Image (cartoon, rainbow, N blue to C red):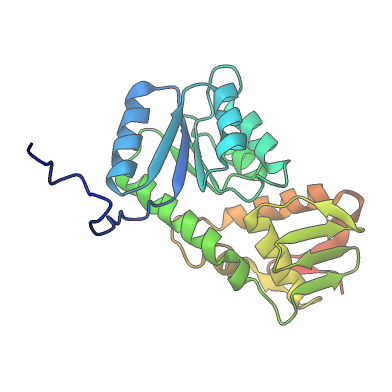
Length: 249
């Protein structure tokens, strides 16, 4: 009987397969766009999971815990902004990067998305190559983020705020404080030298690692979001007009 030489036998050498790249969860209700994005990402070696409805997408995020989420805003059942807000409110999901992919291009929509914790924002129509570039930049920042913001100590405490750099955890008056990666890096930078003023450009460099796709205005959005989360302690971060920001000494 003829033996299929393509099937390894127990006695033969072990067949090694390449390790898959990161898992990307795409929540997009337009089938043509979903197919285009999935094709381009899988060609780069990524594992892609697609969902067409918001409620299904949120369930898959909680089940899979992907390395990155590409999220449309206008979705059936649950919209993208609600999904983003829900992800950022859960400690086990809060660190997952989110790129919003949407037809909404008004500045107010961009600001809302960033304030809710999106890491980047790409409007339709878009170039698959640009999406890939932005996605790789966000993933790269996420991988090195903990190292980039690490200060001389693994734990930084200033006033009511404490950061555990190694565990990437934040606390406000000893209560857990949920921050996005960008917000954590900004706070860690400000708290590394209390009272010192950091310019927007310096903070932008810490957040982006020099990636060209993130604009300066985003720093103000992130600061506004941090202050909102600090609540009554919002004045922990001071604005120095014409210069930048500093934290309380």
